[in-house]
Structures are given as structure tokens and as C-alpha cells.
Image 1 (cartoon, rainbow, N blue to C red):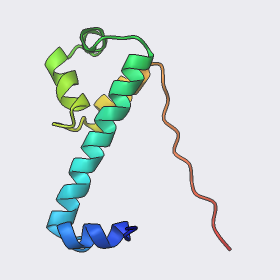
Image 2 (cartoon, helix red, strand yellow):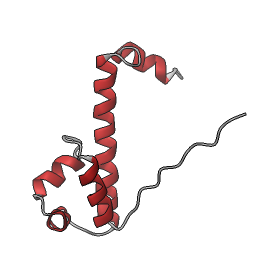
Image 3 (cartoon, rainbow, N blue to C red):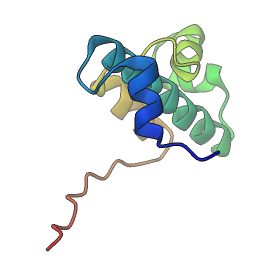
Image 4 (cartoon, helix red, strand yellow):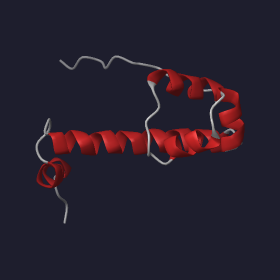
Length: 97
């Protein structure tokens, strides 16, 4: 049975803007960020320990980020991206007419 995903989220976490919905979205973003970093690190064939050494942080800190337990600050996120040889692009969507 196909369901409207927005309705599922509304039912489980409340309407957009509710504290429960925002907490869920924060958790989902942390998970996604961690997966992105983990996959990129693995693609670059870099261990958590090597990435941690490049950033002057602990391996456990990298592990907690990759597991979605914590979200890195914007500064740390950019440092991670640079250490992995990646870049971030912010693109403005094309206006629909």
C-alpha cells in the first residue's frame, strides 16, 4: 500500500514545526550527515584514525559523527570535507514559472 510520506510523518511525529517533528528531522539529518561522511571516507580509503589525525580530533569523535550520535559544527564539517578532498556547493534552485 502506497502512503503519503508526509502524512506518515505527521501521524508519527506531529505537524511540521512541532518539537517532535523538529527533533526527528534533526536526528535524520545527523544520520544522513554521518552516512555521507562515512561513505566518502571509505571511498577515499581513509580510516577513522587517519581522518581524526588529519583533523586533530579523536577517532571516537569521528565514529560518533559517522554513527549520527553527534552533528559536527559547520566549521568541523567543512574541515572534514576538505580533509576528504571534497567540496560543498550551495546552489540556488531555479525559480519555477
